[in-house]
Amino acid sequence: MVAKAQWLWDYGVAIGASNYLGDIGGKEKTRRDFVSDMKLSQTRWNTGAFVRYKWRPKFSLKLAFDYIRIEGDDKLSSNPGRKFRNFNFRNDIFDLGFTGELFFFEDNDLGNTYRYRNGFRAYVFGGVGGFYSNPKSLYQGQWVALQPYETEGVAYKKILLNIPMGIGFYFTFDKTHRLGFEMAYKKTFTDYLDDISGNYPEKPADAYTQGLILRTTELDAATLESGGGAPYSHDWGQKRGDKSHKDAYVTMSISYAYVIRGKSSFYRARSNGFFGRGKKRKMRKIRAKF
Image (cartoon, rainbow, N blue to C red; front, side, top):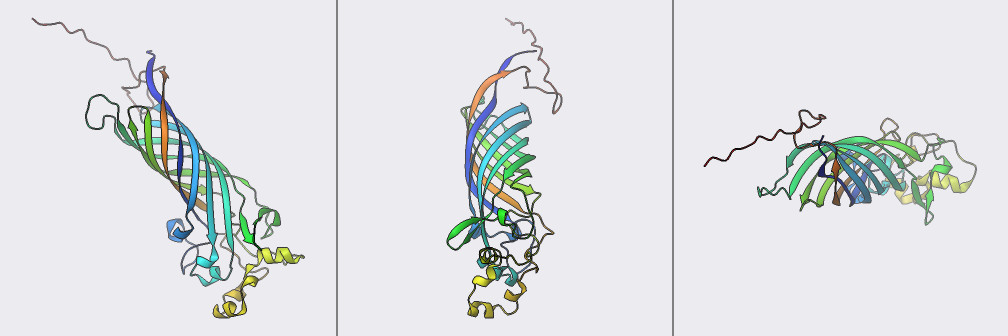
């Protein structure tokens, strides 16, 4: 085995935009999956930090922590059922993800300089993650945390699992600096990123909780009348959301990373397989011919 210095580790920061897929948003149709139900006007931001290790020639491992904000407001929907539900939410998510990156395109010598100082890699990634979720709603001039109120009679959790997946690329300059872009889709196993999933609960005893849950009551008489029967479909025990679809959130980020030079136990410049250990190259003696 040969101990060889390689550029295996990098660490950096990222910043970008975020949005979500849930029960708030969309146009005139009912809840749909993926970007067709997204409200671009509710795009917010995300920021984070990460560390990455090049485990094999075509594969890297990455640990990332992100702070992500998502928002939604029924007032922006053209679906009558959603619009007259009159709900709004904001959720500040703390996300920790562990992913693997598989490179499907590489150019380790941009410009063909034969110095191998500048490069480009594109990759797909997937993995597992955990996140903290705490949806809030703007009610009576304040952002109120909704989970303690069990607004649908369900005691959902704040710490949950997700599956991050997506695509990205980065440029490497002078071997030590990397600028990248990444688009990530975070599939979750909850329908409560926005606190909406199934039906309204039985009518609570106190007036404050009633108003916090059933927001149609905030609309004036003229607005209610303009909605036909849609506003009156919102009542205690009636349908509040679509529990047949889980929520998800997406991010698009640009990043900067600094590459650290370290020692590798194996020479990986040549490899027989994707996870194979590189074989030490045999150097032939060249005799000068005069």
